[in-house]
Length: 272
Image (tube, rainbow, N blue to C red; front, side):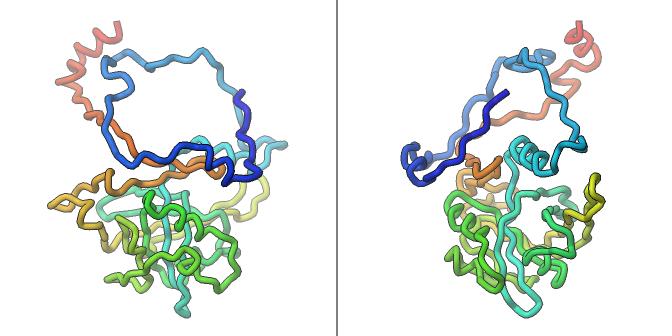
């Protein structure tokens, strides 16, 4: 088994010993350019697997949390801008987030709290039924991370981060001006989750419909169908305090059964 990463007693000292980030974005070959159908994994492993029951009597939900956030990676981050009913702005990152459909544009965000104990972002979404989903880029990741500070109620995370709020077209809350991509969104549905061990309500999922897209002009193609990853430079969430950056990619075309696999006849040859 691998050993857990140690906690850094002085993070800035540890960070200063590491190399600086790459300023460029590049495309590389795939991990195995010579791979052929039926070849399996590039690097087969002889290791066995450990069975883990998430509901075992002696296993806490915190262990499941740590295991999942370090294995379901990298996770996109929803940098949510919301507004309270009395006009107080809020800004916070959430990595239980993804897109689940495009027609209509549908997004999901998960909160590790029930409605009864909702924190600012969830409370605001439930009250106003709207928000802005901003995508975090490398160029302002420190500012985005600063909004997760445990500031007391009433303190504006916008001021803590020093980010720029820009007006939206449909929703009342601001979008992050530094974000390459932002989505104005409206609440579609809410679902709470109950613990399978205690029976208590422990989490909430909101489903959001995208109403307007905002994309920086230098990042999008002419027909508005493709965002340049070299401009977006998105940040992903890993486990613990670890984040991932995207500065390298490869392309893999989706294969066609008849043309590339050879149809059923070709598949039989592969199997044999």
